[in-house]
Length: 156
Image (cartoon, rainbow, N blue to C red; front, top):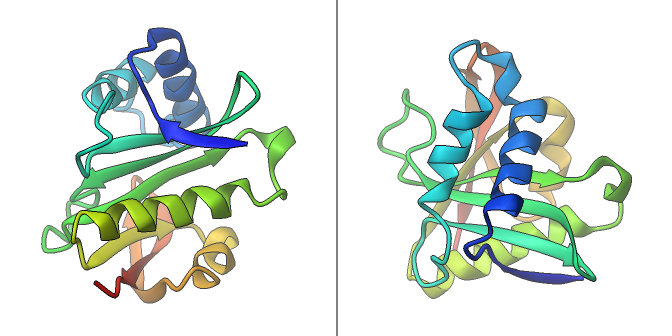
């Protein structure tokens, strides 16, 4: 397993956009796979920036991704830095890959001197983030889905 930053690979970006659309995007009628692709395309080759896509490979095969973004939730503009789109292909779940991506995202954030990292997730994923030091702040609605907003405190 290897974690890196997404480089200019349109085929892989299309795959990630499809994953995101099938997992979450289809829940909002205003979101299309192409809109997701366009949003993600600005994050390629951004290993020195906060806005980036962290990808995980097993051999040459892309198996997981995480997305670092600004102000993900419109109702909470004061929460600036967000971890989102933590996705592991279904046949690779339960093997610690999401945990590795979360830790890499936290490390990347800390290296940039960013103190707080936010995320939102559905109830069935809360235990994953709790074990990585994220603390629940409050419940929220996002694209018609009930979520909980979490915050991680980085010691820098």
